[in-house]
Image 1 (tube, rainbow, N blue to C red):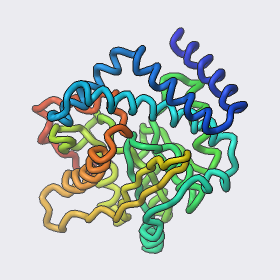
Image 2: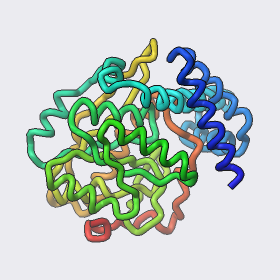
Image 3: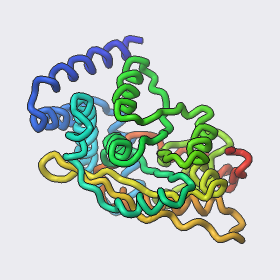
Image 4: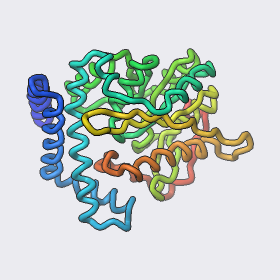
Length: 304
């Protein structure tokens, strides 16, 4: 495809430029490129404005555009930082990061049931995974295969360079289950629209959103603790990785434990997006579930 050719050329050029620029200058370039993308990609910009205004109805269109310009700039910085991380040693990456909630990770690991981490397309999620794999033990993560094969290979190379194992979304649950039964650690994103029967509908910004039920089903099956994790930027090109308290499992007599568990996970993500709206990717179609499907809840058997 012609679009893929342009994307490949742009990625190669950006990689070369980043290699010869000071890191802070490269990040500034990435932010500028993000702002340029904001100006040029009208369809994505309009979708993002609609999503943001629906989530924050009290904000004006002007206020939303200020947030979204920062969102696109943030995305550009993250892309450049990924190229930077590919050139850095593990110790150098960890020196840029401070960790909040490290004791929660250790307490979860010693339970011997494996640990599940989840986040969204929020903050520096790729760096979060890399630092987690370097600082503790390598993660097994689920990732959607990109439409562009070359970009997909680049991203997988960066992810696996620190020991992270990537499993494709198709058939991923069984791989995650095996990792948990071996007392491993797995990572899942929960903010993408799910179209198959394993989806569970929960409220996200007071709108029904089809969400993966894999976290809830696996946690209920294995007893593994579920830890929300988020990568936040700090001044000076540094970062803070936050590990929140594990999600409280549903009561034994809960009539719909999968939905309850998934809603609790989603509530924590929404709290962070409300706190830092410029760090979430508003430019994807998160809310597209038919109203008639809102009450359908998968069983654990549907997922596992």
